[in-house]
Length: 366
Image (tube, rainbow, N blue to C red):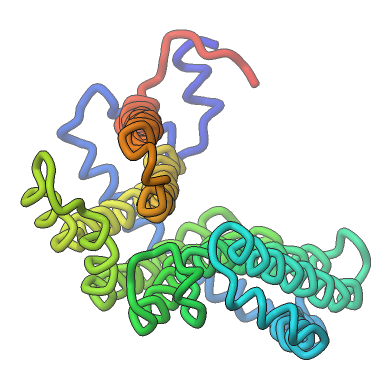
């Protein structure tokens, strides 16, 4: 395609952004005009929302709520009956330490997660015909529920509020409970926002209506994430500070970074909010996806560092030097991988989001 043909094949927002790619000074004016145009479509969103009760129906709405209720009820009921049916086995599991006790606890969590999926899936099957809007909404809620509880399972495996001897994170019981709540909210808020956008798409909302909706729920979700960072800043600081070694290179700097992590957290989620708004206005989600990748990578690094901190405390005393060397090599490898992933996300996704709007001379047809 030539440049003109490419612009013709773009969406109106992308074409407008590409036309000013060579004039960065006009970028803010274009975003402002897009924002004004988007807000002017607010009645279209309101009209779509007023039609939703008729489109979805009261029965389907109740069943969608029932998916969540049935899934969570099945999960907690499974945990209760496992303890009731095998009290001796679970008593031993709560007393065991090391890999065996950790594995037994994780297996019970996985069984509860499977029960959650089965309970929610039974309700989804009652919603409507396969492929209908109600059926697609039901599967959306089901997948979102399983996604959230899977992350919760991982966080629970590291924190274990009620079994401190199986806890990987170096925090006390009360801090572990608060951190588990905060981390669940960190997953739940963006998940709700993403599912809201997909639900609008399933129910036939126009692109303009979805953009208007995003301008409303993105700031709300971002504000919620900022509140989570601020409210739980001391709890996560305690987690991070406990993993800082007593001696070594840059200990004071590491301790300061651990105590003041929330400053970077506020900046990061503020930038993520801007990236989401930019994606809604320009229909270019490269920056937003890059921020999501960075967030996931950092959470994975935190869990890995916590695991290594717990493991290295139990290195065999007869080979302390060899164990330390192996642990340091593994840490270095993972940290290099994380650094590469973050650098790629910043360079390829975040910074390239604007340059991707520049119309090339030839673009391959899809």
